Image 1 (cartoon, rainbow, N blue to C red):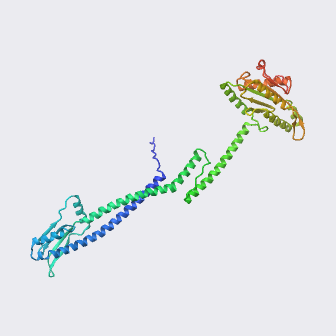
Image 2 (cartoon, rainbow, N blue to C red):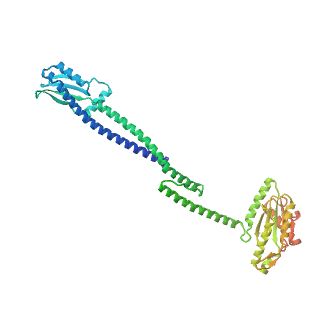
Image 3 (tube, rainbow, N blue to C red):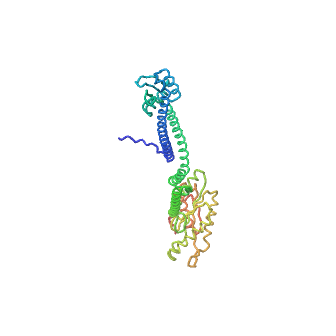
Length: 425
């Protein structure tokens, strides 16, 4: 089994740009500092070598007489007088035979003196030799070794300058990265935030704000246009889904809820009523002589009658009551919550009375029909949807057997009997 690869967090764009600015600024400052230092060291080396020759010439003039007379004490005195005030590590005066007449050496010790000696040995010429002449004839020579103190000081100051430039460049890079963050990264963050909201929350109403950079502004405008299309498509889908959901739960002819919707609503209502100890009533409605209307006048007229019946029933109910078409010419009404039995009986009476007015047909004719209504109460006549529907259905057939166009409350002694037996539709 292969070991699972360790995934490190990816750097942010701000961090990448910040590091890039910092690296470029430090590299540029470092290169510039090194170049300036090299140029300065070169110029200073040339100048130091020229000074060594001038010092050697001055010493040769000063010790000329001492060399001619082989006066070592005078030569040492003259040599020390000049060498002590110059940047020399060591100075020697020789006569024409190569004998040492005078010698002077800088008494510096420690790390700085060693550093100066190494720098002088690396950058300055080999010991400078200049002849000591008298009357146009060489009587000896001067040998000088440079100290390199000015070179060391220049190198140290150059290093300090490079470090200072690096610090200033780093601060400048941080400032530039902040500007870049403000001008580039902030618009990109807005874009990413809107994209995440659209993908995770399906929030298509947010938009990317305008920005000063042309390319980012164009990208934001294109993304906003895409969001406009997605929002319109989402609205269309929601409308289609709502329409499909309505079609699945409602009758296409009357616009009333269908049997599946009604039974689901009835189950939830009875569950709530049991929990809250409330009462409810179920009315089962059946149109009288509807088969004769269909057979004699046609299905189109039958459909007009059903639509009118549905409208009249709905007009007699309270706002929160539910009426549904169960199929054919059968309707059901759910009254919940119910304060008193008389409320259900009064609504049933209003429904029956509303059918006394003739129904106007599209062809100009009119006809009169009636409804038989059965009433069942929860929890007295049934504690579940099926038993309550059966009780109301049986009560409706009792009303038909007695007299069509009336309402009937479910009778306790008849609840176990099929109310459809012997009934005439």
